[in-house]
Length: 430
Image (cartoon, rainbow, N blue to C red; front, top):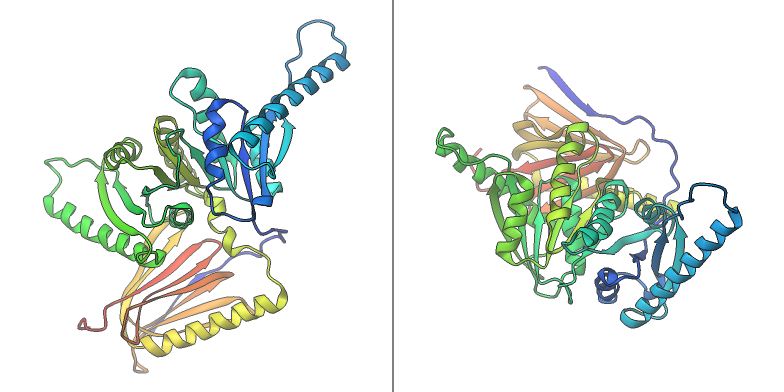
């Protein structure tokens, strides 16, 4: 017998004071290109309307060369703020709800919007997506792009053509938590009976020198992953969910297919840590925002785990952990002896297959250490075994297999990513 132990450990994180996101923040400059943001925000079924805030940001007035009275500069800035407030209120009254609060800030637009979104615990930030002239692109799209890059809150950039809740939604799916959470958020703002297409782009082009069987095998694998995500999303009864695999450069491929679908909304998540991941995601994101002729919803990686980071009262936390322990006990009872594949989706390294073919022996959760364990190996005492430990657990979810008393998959999320156990079908021979 030999022991192989694989651990996922985390250093103790510094204490954080996080708050539950509840507010809806609308960023406007008072011009017609922001009309769509105000009008669409009124349609959103997110939160209490009294928690909606309309924000307009006035850039600091440039100081002319030469000697000038500081009070004159301050007075000029006050006039700019009063003018911006008047425009924002008129826009709110005309297109939105008069109960919405209007707030005026001074500073860099993208940085200030990101700061206010964090301060006001925003669930989502709504901005107008500029047109395709030089001025509109600079004022609208570039501010939205910078906001998405530096912010920690989902950004919905609304195009003027979107006058109702979206019915045709395209989700760029890379199987990371951010893209999955972006899809979940899109479901919240979708029209009843909407069609949602999950799209994965393989960053290769079909060439004669690439064997055809590779494409077939890869498409089968990606198709199974898309089906898995569809199951996790669990919205098949409310929406029609389709799948599509594209080949080529991600940005142009996604934009082209959005045109083909005549999509109302393009949805994407950004990558988290890791220089290469940020660089590649940034390039694709820039192409989507700058080239989009349709509304765009982007969920930053920093926002993907916020739903697991909300502070709970002691009794709620204890109940949640008791539920996790019970879930894993029940999962173990139903699935002991089944073989499967263990995947680890690390935020920095990406998805990797860690183990395949071992029999599942059981899983447990220990509340004092906030640690889960998965055990694999032989059902007999002799034979190799493997133990997978996951520390600082944030979420434990089980995907049922249907009518049988068995399951399809187990997901354990922590600060570093997701550990996923995919079980073979019960009827499949071992």
